[in-house]
Amino acid sequence: PPSAYEEDDGTPPPSAYEEDDGTPPPSAYEEEAGGVAEPVLTTSQGMPVLTAESTAKYVRSGRGLKSCDASLTTRDEVLRFLNTHNSKPVVALRITGYHYEKKRHPKKKGNKTHLEERERVEDFRYDVDVSDFVYPFGFFYSDAKDATTVSSLVDEYVASTNKLKALHVRKVVEYFDWAYLKNAVESHLRNNLGWCHHLDIRVQVDNNFLRIYDSNNLSAAWENSVSHVLLWVPLGIPALSFKAYRGDFSKNRSHNITNVKSAFRIPYHPSQVLDVIRPLLWCPGWSGAQVAMQLLATAARDTRHNRHNRHNRRHDNHRRH
Image (cartoon, rainbow, N blue to C red; front, top):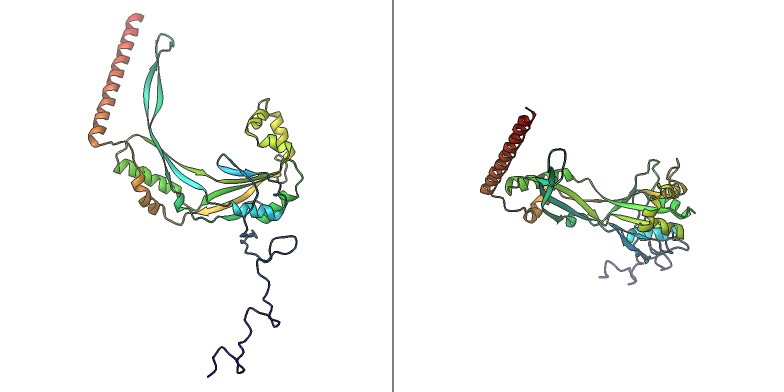
């Protein structure tokens, strides 16, 4: 019998992807004259998700990257640059253990020949990388008060003729309870590893911004770290003039657009993250005997200090009488 996929005359039916004339439809990503392919995949705020990579040159600056490439003068190229470099931030927990000591310095103050100061002494510091827990795709959105979309903000940047115009994108990790994780790490270090001194646990984020600015002499002076400091030296008047020209003090939006964010997330509970990084947590080996010995040493030092103070007071009273 004839195949279920054949007509009675033995000719297969036309493909579902062909028109009546046998010509396949144009690709959904095929570029039209003068712009990005339409239609394309976009976010809820109208931010196109592009597959082609940007070839614009850039430099690493601090904890992010910036570019003033001559190609970044059109909406399509700016969007392509943002999509290309929207890589996830590098996130780490910086754990620092420290204690305070009273130290004497040979300074004369009144009748005293020394001055005691309380100084911080750092015992250890290290970073625990948690970047692997960050989902690798960021979502562009605008936090502008007037609900302006990301695409509209990019259009504003491209249309601006201000010499100091810039588009700044901040990468953020949202909807994760960092306070819970830091408290859990501190509890582990104190209760399980026996650390009894001060702790400072902070979240360090690198690769956390993208910055695009115009290429001209004025912006080069503003973006250069050395000249930027020099602009603030003479009472800050040159720097304030630059900021006024850029529109930072205007009621309208500044030409330095900072309302674009790229949101990343960690799809795990802080307790799950702690279970994985627990073997990486350490502190100097404090056993119960060591803690007891240090407490005894501290008590002995305080006793000597109090005895010395009583002797000085007795000596002062004797001199007054």
